[in-house]
Amino acid sequence: MTARASDRARYDRATAHLEAPLAIVDLDAFDANADDLLRRAGGKPVRVASKSVRCRALLERVLAKDGFAGIMSFTLAESLWLARSGFDDVLLAYPSADRAGFAELASDPKLAAAVTVMIDDPAQLRLIDEARDGGREVVRVCLELDTAFKLLGGRVRIGALRSPLRSPAQVADLARAVARRPGFRVVGIMAYEGHIAGVGDAVAGRPLRSGAVRLMQAAARRELAERRAEVVRAVRAVVPDLEFVNGGGTGSVQHTAAEDAVTEIAAGSGLYVPRLFDNYTSFSGRPAALFAQPVVRRPGVGVVTVLGGGYPASGAPGRDRLPVPYLPEGLRYDPQEGPGEVQTPLLGSPADDLLIGDKVWFRHAKAGELCERFDALHLVEGDTVTATVPTYRGEGHTFL
Image 1 (cartoon, rainbow, N blue to C red):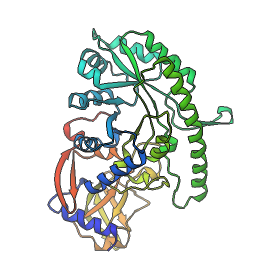
Image 2: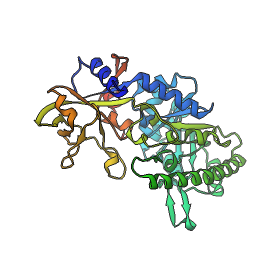
Image 3: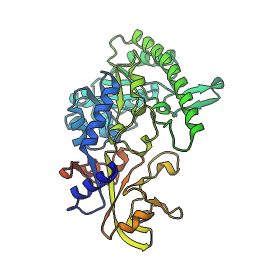
Image 4: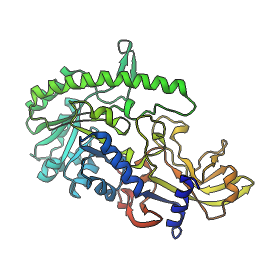
């Protein structure tokens, strides 16, 4: 029996009493992936990206491990909710225009001490001030650096369109603007290199593209390490007591951790290891989060149909944004239908061994987005469900 076949047998036994659709997290795989992130971080603390987990119980589990410290959140409303729930170090990774949230943050000492907000433009400071509604708490801010790799004098850009702040002078100027404005304090710098951490460099069947990606990423790492160090020196000249410099992502943990200027690493997807992380040379993990759909039809030889399953991931549309049938091995989509909203035909010889009511296990393309489809995660240890915990959705929250 292959390792994947063994996993399928375990998951089927563990969930035999549960009706699909359902979602699971294999805790042995989850914990092994967490340990691997810590190993690659080389002693630097790892801040957990909550958008890649979206389950408070699992955030608590990973943060209980020595080496993990703090949360990187994705909306202000989520940040405040987590802080009210007892998480005392929450870095909001994206600027916000949530005026009601800023009014709450500025009026509550506990929230203001726990939550750090992201800025890259003085206009964001003005919005926060206009939203204070009498709140006088000092707002902790983090400055975001653009990490994109630029070639041909800037005519070619590789990387996400995020912050407009690129040079040491630009980031230091914003730090000075914050220092001049009462009610704010710069505590950190963040630089997320998504073109390095989030792009696979070993895509099956694409050797030339994979080689080009590796060359790009190596050059981008060198450029960013030099520029990030210069930015940190420039900002520390303005803010000597800077608390943290955050960088990285699941695919670049060990490279970013090697930079002296970086004090902490951000990662989250590496806990669940969705399908987009199958194509990396920098690490390999164990798929930990899966969902199951029930077989509801047998249209013919070599075909079964499962209920639903059309859960595409965000990003530029493409086949890589689709979930993949994972267990049993050997199933594939009908190219005329793909994964559907209410039914998904699956082709392949394993279909002939599946009965009505059997489960087919899928992996999502991304990590936490799976939790927007399910209100609970069944936690599997060995061949037993040892707990069932709510996702954000299960607690009544859909922050985005």
